[in-house]
Each structure stands twice: as structure tokens, then as C-alpha cells.
Length: 417
Ligand SMILES: [Zn+2]
Image (cartoon, rainbow, N blue to C red; front, side):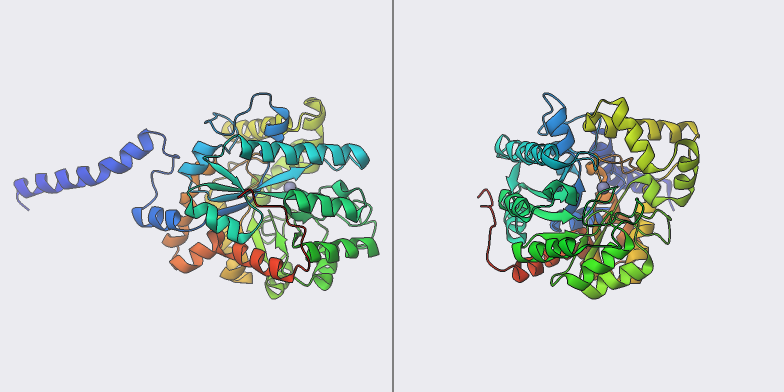
């Protein structure tokens, strides 16, 4: 090749590389390494994340504005825009040891904080309760804000409260959190009910009737199988990963993944490092007790300010990984879990449930802006664009539509439109 031509090739190569460099330099999500084809597909797809704990910040952090960019945490409007996130389920979560009327009051405060965040950011956010709402929001270039309730104890053993929450816009109920409640066993507690009690089964029936998704993340294996037996609609795991890769009881076994697929449901992969990496989980348990013990300790340290305890634990864990005190977990581990779940359950039954703002993120998936990396990695693995679109959001939209069809009567809140 002549030196003249060589120079020309170099000039062309530099010209092609410049836009990508500019993107990285301007902090465009730190995902500047994503191929143009992946970026296009990611932009075109409706991207849904079914589990984000940002309401703790909305409630506890005075002056927290979701509309501006933050240097901590994982979620805000600018970073969701950069990451092409079209819809997210804000988690309405109250710790398992807050029960009775105080849990109900806290739940209502969290629901209010989400609704107020939407009301005060009308150009960016819109309240959504149905799959059609999500599609409409995407068409209007707004981010659809949905709500999922994480922990059956928040209904205070009362179906009337469940109906009230549904009317306020809650669209899934995680049957338990880290501890058992009065009607369902958790995966991280000693079995007390052998799965679901008769009232627990009524809760599942009422969820079906209301068009609220049954979420089996966190529940004991027996609770999962009981719920599957009762439900008339597909169920979801809003934020769970694969137990074949990390042995946490919070993750799903291959048998559970197959049963979920048979039910038509979808497992939304969780990015928390201890659920992604067995090596990390074992080392972390040895260092400071299991994830439940760690969270309890941090909550006490932060005086019950749950935004503080989550952000602090994430900071401490990331620091320990950086210092080499704990094995470093990289974002590619998310792809490993997605791929495993797809192999076991099929591409129609897998999605994304990050646990952003509620967990320790792996390196390279530091916040919502980095989500296009997932699309890029799946394409590079040979996934078809159709399958990638399903995983990014198509599957959960399909489940929502099925759950809506199963619902009889309606207590759906107006969608904010
Ligand atoms: Zn959770």
C-alpha cells in the first residue's frame, strides 16, 4: 500500500472514530464502546427495568431532584435518557421489620413520592399503569414511571389495602421481602408456613382479579410453586438471577426457571453483585455476614434512613472490590445470567430488573446510562435483534398485557394521561 493511501486510510479511520470518542468524552453514559448497530436497536426498542429503589431517595433525601444528574446512585432523568431507559418500576419498599400501620403509612409516603416526582417533571416522566401507557409514553419521548410493591407485609394482612394500593397505581406485589410475613415464606428466612397460607393464596387470586402482577422475587421456593399453582396469569420475578451461577437462595433454580416459562412468566435479571457472582457472594458472606445481615447492620447505622443505608452499602462494597478485599465483579456477569436464563427458560421469558439504587452494581454497569452495553453484548453473542428487543422490554410488556386480560372488573387508577 502506498504511503499516500495509508495516510488516507488513517484519516478515514480517525474520522470514523471521532464521534465515538466525543461520546465518551462528554460522559455519554460511559457506554461509548457500544456499536452503532446496538445503539440503534437500543434506541428503537422499548427498554423496561422492573426494579429500581429510587423512591428511598425521593422520600429520605431532602431536596433530591430526579430531574438533574447526580454523582452518586444509579438513576436520574439525564442518566435514564442516556441509557435509553423507556420505563421503570419504582419499588415501593418498606423493610420487613416495619409492619402494621407504620408500614402502611410508609408505603403511602413512598407512593406519594413517586407520584409527586412525576407531577413535578411533566416533560420527562409520565405515570403509567398499563402496557399501552408504556408504549404511548415511548411515543411521546417520555419515561414511563410505574410502581411495584416489594413485600406482602405492606398490605397489613388486609385485601382492602391491596385494592387501595392498586387504585393508586401499584402494578406488582412481591409476595415477601427478606423475612417471612404472616402468609408467605421468604427465601432468606426459616420456613414458617410451608409456602403460602390460605390467605396468601387469596392474595394471589385478588392480584389476578385486580390486574396486578404476582412477583415471586424474594419468596421461598415452596411459595413460588404454590403461587404458580394458584395464579391464572403469568407471574414475574421482578429482580432475580440464576442460582446455577450464584447460589444465593434469592436466585432461581433451573427447575424454577422452567416452571416460570411454562407459566408464561418472565425472570428479570438482577445486577446485585452477590446475586451475580458466587465468588463474590462467598467472600462477602465470610467477611461481613450474608446480604440480609449486612443490610440490617447498615440500616441501623443510618438510623432507618434507607436511602443512606443502600447508598452506603454500595459504596463500601465497591470500595472493598477496588481495594481487592472482595472479588471484583464486572458487568459482563449480567450477560452470563441472561444467557443462562435464555438457555433454560427461552428468550421469551427473560428481562431486566436491575435493582438500581437498591444494590451494589458491578463495574461497568455503574448506572442506568450504561444499559446499551447489554444490547451490544447480546448482539455480539449472536442474539437476533428480535430476541434482544424481547429481553429489553418486549417480554414484560407481553406479560403485562396478559395480566390485564386476566383481570376482571377494574380498579385501575387513571394513567396520568
Ligand atoms: Zn429486593
